Length: 416
Image (cartoon, rainbow, N blue to C red):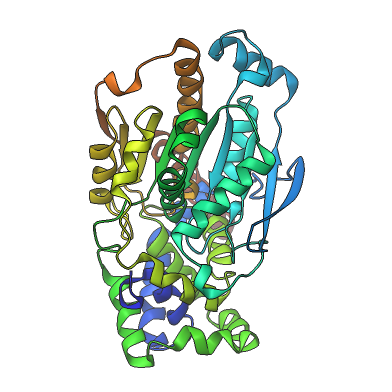
């Protein structure tokens, strides 16, 4: 994926304020149309989670990886084990390992971590090198193959035995494929389930364009391909620009990340994660996407229960990428979500949470019953987040009624 095809860079470039007058007008129009929906979806639920344990994993090339563990309550684990394992023992349950994507961090999994923990499962989340709280590394090590080795290091050091369910978003799913290619026997022995969320096995160009991707590409062509490298040398300037262009920044993040209204707090949260990634790291990872192709590694997951989950309106990894995954893994379940973009775990969290919990449950039962997963029929479903739409409509209706009631009181007061 070259700089000219990367919408994330479009976000970063846009914050420079180039053509800010035009873009700000678009942002204002967008905000007006979505303000009511975004307000209706706002909740008091916290967008952070306190882990039960924090660890540092040291890789064989000396990079420190930040890892967080969420441990379920004993009662929840026992309840999950009774319905899913052979002997009903919590220690027989699989551990879920969450791997984030490009320019994100383990913070993006906040909803899924909470849901899986409440369902009784142990959860491991980690920051990929150069992202979040993990250490920086030599630029030549920012490759998918190196990330596969990092994932193996995290697992072997913190989950040395027991079954696993691997979940990866975008570059995180690519990391899982690199692990399968490098450690096929390890994957066969220990991975009972896998979820590829808004990801690609390679073989197709990432990012299918669109207005914002095109805008970002044009900016880069005008500013030159070294814009991120130059900005990375002046982080204080980039921070000042971000503060000035906050509304524009949120608009660009919303356009690239989501395809339906989300709470304003979620847009801010996503922007802080995306644009908190060091610019030189963003730039240095780009080379690893050009020519990426791990399609042969898909077969290493054919024994596992597999979920492929993506948004129909994802501009970075559109549904055609997910189709390649399900073609390569017999028996995989494919869920395509209407009105969903790339950062789908924050856009439709309840929907993804339910499917992931079901995946882990099925993976545990499949291991206990020694089910031949590849013999299962392929299932593809196109779904709509009905619960989210209903909630949005209900809250918008309530807000409208409150406004009308307020106007009525105001009119009566003036009449008196």
